[in-house]
Image (cartoon, rainbow, N blue to C red; front, side, top):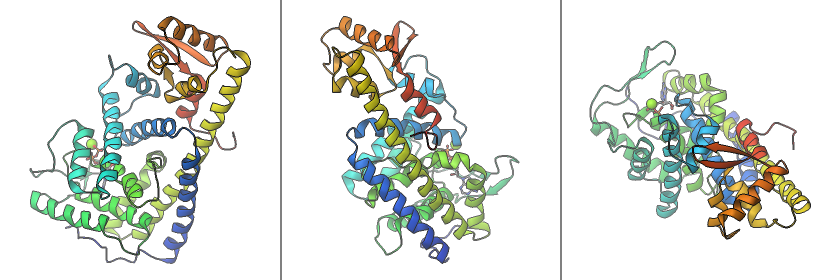
Length: 358
Ligand SMILES: Nc1ncnc2c1ncn2[C@@H]1O[C@H](COP(=O)(O)OP(=O)(O)O)[C@@H](O)[C@H]1O
Ligand SMILES: [Mg+2]
């Protein structure tokens, strides 16, 4: 079955969809509001981007652990291929954000750049036929995306127009359609799923629904992986557009709510940590020191000297040992280096924030 150009002919503004889009938009607006008032946006962005890189890659069975992921961004020796790929994902996402901000458009040429960073190669758009989509469990071919480069390019330029042309359709509804269309065009040999999920967030930024890139659907998709694959397929084969769009809107709503909790939890933890250090180690306390401990779940001596918290490595090392003595940090040895883990932050990022904990 050939895929059609956008816009869809299906009714994408059913009563159910419109109703759900209201609550999804409300949740997302709340998230954007919370994100705009937090003091240390970079800390939140960093943590969430890494989390998303990990989750989105996991959908494609590229599995890394939090441990390895965090270690890798401060010490890149001895890391696995999977962890390298996850780091490339984070890099691609950040670059995509910059490009959208720069062009105020989401262009196909930028999508090609994003995928190249992600995959660490410049194969670009498919030129050879043979790519098919299979059922993950049975291996049966469920869909054959366009095979000729010409057709792929034509569909992409149609998608680009759909993305960048304003109309009166809710951007969240359009995001669901764009994701489906992009995955169906499947323009690259590999990395289509991950690139498509980066496009989702960039589209929200482009439409002013988010000021900073912090809404990530991959955790939701992992939790509903079977539905994600089924609905991608059934939107096409059974015209289950309503169900597909509702699925994505629900993802936006739930994820927004969870992300607000996560941001609040990290903020609270920062305050608690600050008070703790003020009380127990007043001589070393400074706001900048607390910030450093939250830039990354792993801290090393250079973080303190680079940011001029202390002058010498000896003092930095002393500070970190004191923080370990009061139970805030835990040291681990990696090769010849010692790192200090912010235990609570690490657990929070690893396990997510449990409902009603904060
Ligand atoms: N039946 C389908 N119809 C459309 N898209 C699909 C279908 N099945 C899977 N996909 C998409 O294809 C992605 C996998 O494609 P792939 O190029 O291997 O991307 P990645 O390397 O990022 O996994 C999935 O994450 C999903 O988004
Ligand atoms: Mg793949």
